Structure formats: structure tokens, C-alpha cells
Image (cartoon, rainbow, N blue to C red; front, side, top):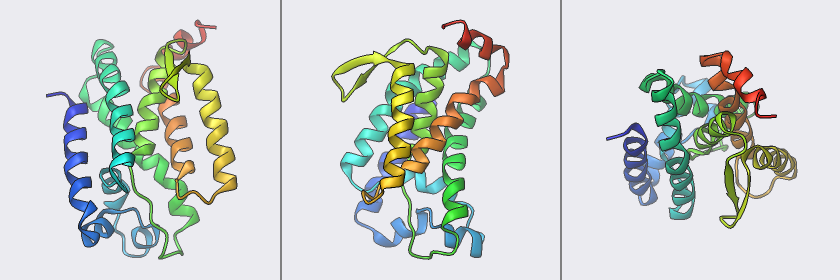
Length: 198
């Protein structure tokens, strides 16, 4: 079994259990106030296994499956191994959580859930490795990955400033940025490979 399928399986099971168990939902969610004040650092990881509803879960896991399988194979081909892929996924969760820990550490009512930061990291690593591959915008319109990436980051920043939709656009943004630079951190020569596409 691949790591992608294993993460998807665990996420689906945990999310499903949390749909009908508010106590478990709150126990696993990212609540910066509890992370900082009570040192519940595990929440920086566990919140990625919890989703608001089936649509939230489906969108994240389908996107992760689509690009996670590619990134697993790419890292294996480049000789990085499974640890590099785990570093990409869980590093994305951690980096995407950092702004919330700073901004909301005094707000006990703030809660964030979902794997979006990690999924964005995986997606943007795929864009880094193959910037001109096509991504389906709105699941219908094929556009180059690098164009999608730029539009996505602009959209995240715009929606973050606008607010009001209960989506953590900051997590999407920082997870994406982390995923984009991560391959070059593993092997700086990949930056030259990326630039050669232009």
C-alpha cells in the first residue's frame, strides 16, 4: 500500500468518526489557544485528519490522491524515499498552521480543521516539478500548472483579506508556498531544472 492511500484511509476513517462525535472533533482540531497555553502540539498534525463534512473531505482527498500518487513516484524515482514524501505532507500541515498559532493564540474560540495545507503542499510540489502540465480549473478547463498556481495564490490572498467564508485561506497559501520550495530544499539542483522550463 502506498503512503498516499494510507493517509487517505486514516483521514476518511477519522473524519467520519468526527462527523458524529463533537468531543473527538474538538480533541483533534487545531485550536491555537490550547496548543500554546496547554502545549497540545499534537493538534498541529491531528487537525489534518478532521474535516467539516463529506464535501470538504472528498475535495481534499481527491486532490491529494490525484497529485500524491505522482509525488510519491517522483520522489521514489529521484531517490528521496518515503521520508521525503512524509516531510512534504506533514511539513505542509505544520507550516500551514504556523500563522494561526501566531495570530489566534489568545482566542480560545478559534478552530481550524482539514488537510488543505498539506494537500496544497503536495499540489504545488507537483507544479514545481512539472510546471506546464495541465490542471483542470473548476474540474473542466485545462490550464498550465504554473498559471493555476499563480492564480491560486492570488485568490487565497484575496479571500483571506475578504474573509467571511469559514475557509482557512491562509493555510492554503502557506502550505502551497512550502510545497513549492520543498523539492529544491531536498535537492537545490531541481531549481535549475524548474527554471529550464521557461
